[in-house]
Length: 260
Image (cartoon, rainbow, N blue to C red; front, side, top):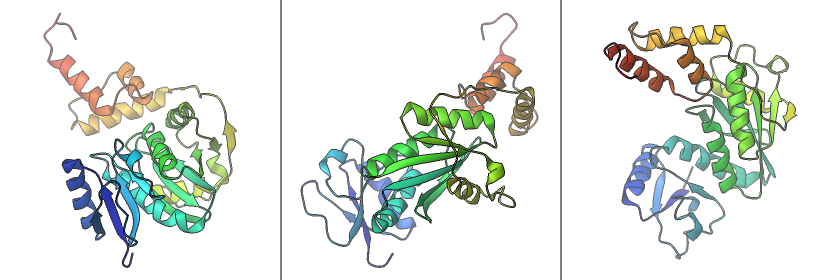
């Protein structure tokens, strides 16, 4: 990164401390900024809070939230790389799953990648990119390897009016890349798909329910198998697996006849 620094503009001491520690762990030089004052020339990206973003007119500004430093870091990387190319579009490939992998392409370069906490969290990454690059379109390409979680991802993106394409993974170069979220997402990002304009239906299959029940047994050390109805709710995004395990455990502990 050379002599470049990241500027932090926030009056929230907790967020400042979290950002400063995270960036220094990444061996990045940090500069404290004050609203209304000139940004030093060595600063390549400014990071601020959502509430204070309106105070910053710096062209490469990233919004950070407490507890989401990896998301902020991905946006910082994209900001640093994207500004150099002047491209008018960012392509985001998504390998759908319980924790979907994603890759952000600026032309032919991958300028950011990672793993989101849930299918719906992919839309939050889109919001960060849209905020950081108001002059660039953010287009998503979502693979079809996991139909239920593909539908959840696509529906979350459509609610925020992102352009979305469904990619047939048989037409990508995914062979040998399964297990590597970044490479899979990059392959999806580089493959044109079919534009989606309407919400996708969720079709949870018996096999997917059985697989999730097996995961619940594994996650709980063999103590809990979540019921089929609760497994379906997890697959449809209504509950997290942790919430499903807690609900099932509470129901098992409840005495007969007690409300659950």
